[in-house]
Length: 343
Ligand code: GZL
Image (tube, rainbow, N blue to C red):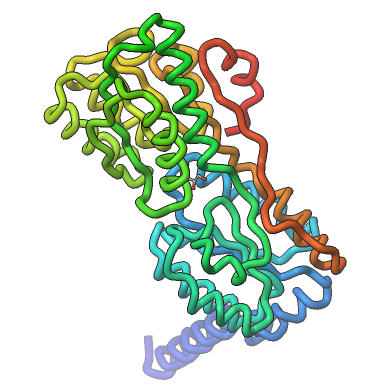
């Protein structure tokens, strides 16, 4: 092939490569919308812009909670939702909230990983005139002027229900006066769920001198940590009668550790299991008998949050707190609810 033909072929190749590059970069076609155009899209459709900072995705409860808010705060329902997963770290939530403030969202919705340390960033939101709505967990009472309203569960009531069920069950077994050795797997320390469930259960426990809480330790609401802590407790306390586990994820881990120690739970063995959340996987174990009691914590809070925001948009007064409905599940009633369980 002579020199001219080689140069011609090289030129053609160069032009082809240039055309491909220019097409990909959008020089000829539709260009990527600039940030301003995205903002206009939100304003054009008069969408209510909500910044949502979620604790993490540590449990089935948590992912259901997230889905509930995403479905309720959808574009079809008139919202533009910006979601951030903090992976259970407060500093990630503070960063996300600062981002929402700089983007001048209309509302900030968030579930605080723990109750303390929010004053600075929530004061910034207040100074920016952005209403804050708490979901699920709360911040310290002393800072309650920094949020408009809260939607969630009465965690202390959940703890009371656990203690009341245990007292009822001991009486039913004819063992109201029997000595009872209890261990507690706590959730994330200083979270509203941990503080409330602990306080509620202890309020009942202190009425029974024959109940002994041998140890309370955090499993941080995860299966792996729940299993690790339970294995240590079994080594330290050979005669545990009751495990109070503050969420189903930790319960699944604890039951694995108990099985590996050659012991059985629920109606099949010596160790009574009281759990919290009532996700479907746990309710199936209640029906099968290896979890004795599961105290519900209802994650379906999205609709209520959307309703409260609409009230605020209409300039209506809102309550400081909105509670979701919750039950207690045992073998006596779980069959009536299992099939309809959405999560
Ligand atoms: C409860 C919520 C807790 C759940 C856990 O309101 O804060 O956090 O019980 C989750 O499953 O990790």
